[in-house]
Image 1: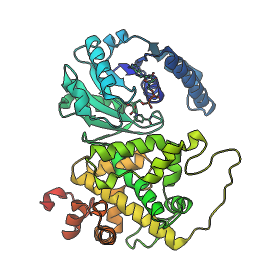
Image 2: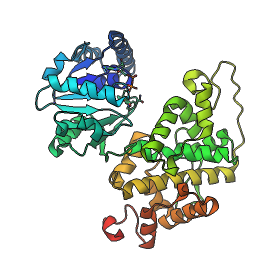
Image 3: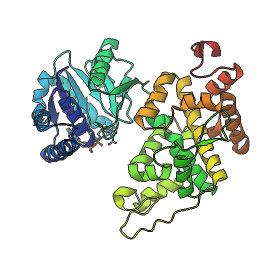
Image 4: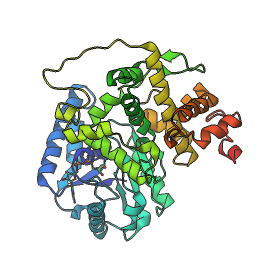
Length: 407
Ligand code: NAI
């Protein structure tokens, strides 16, 4: 695939254009706003200069990348594209209108993809004349730096076409995982408890935000005993990460997941976060979120409480494992791909299912049952996957006959 079309020159579209152009593709970058194209070019210039300073590319490569990207306010140049990736505003009716236009221009064989984070790929495909040419190609932000890309076939997608698209993205140096077309795909689904359980622990008054952040960065459960701790924790704590992502974005993703899963209790949004959105405390970008980022901010270090830290990290990790196990149970992706997605996509210190094996499957079941006994809430229901594995004395990665043995 040599000629790539990108729709939308915002954060994601610009990143995707940069990736394709760096891999010697001719890119046609389209945006309805001329200003967005200009900003995209200015930002690319800065990024490439930084890469030169770091010695990652030379002047000749910079020139090649820039000359590979052609910017347009018309879609006509898409006529020569092999693949068109859409990255415009997250609005299904606007996206569908754009695809209608794209299809009237591109060749019969051109593959069309959406970078959507939350919309159904199948419903977008249904709006096309030829739905079999459509799939989801979900990059992570910042696209040029994040290694993972989720490939999401619609139920109408042609298998061969999906393989070609997958191979193209791999040829661009990315690591791909195939995900079923369900809300949140892999990463945005499996990662939910990282935020929601942290918020829950905070709301119940067990610990403050700083302590919870510290717990996830410092002490994560490891080893078969689950009592040991390791220093290889998560890169950021949940509250720091939500401030980084922005509460407007993070809250909407949670709310969308909750509603897309027909009010599934595990994805219930938190009032603490909702109030922060209402107050305009959106995180780093607004100077205040859960933490203060203003010029006069005071950083007061807290003394870690080792016992509390261990309990917090254990509870959040167990909830993450349960979510990952459920994703495996419902065939959202292969167990190995779920772990790959979380380690490569969002830099988790370990794959969650490998972590479950390490902690002991029975240990995970017992921990979830203890939470369920305490709250009697659906949220703490242990995944049938974990329960069955424990019953049969099996693990995620120690036994290839995994699912067959569960029935
Ligand atoms: P953005 O707001 O930075 O950029 C969107 C661009 O699309 C703007 O330049 C806008 O002018 C243009 N646009 C809007 N309507 C258009 C139309 N009808 N025709 C042509 N151009 C149009 O948005 P962002 O953050 O890049 O997101 C784009 C898509 O990528 C969304 O579907 C989002 O869900 C998805 N995504 C976003 C991630 C993120 O972290 N920002 C991560 C992964 C996926």
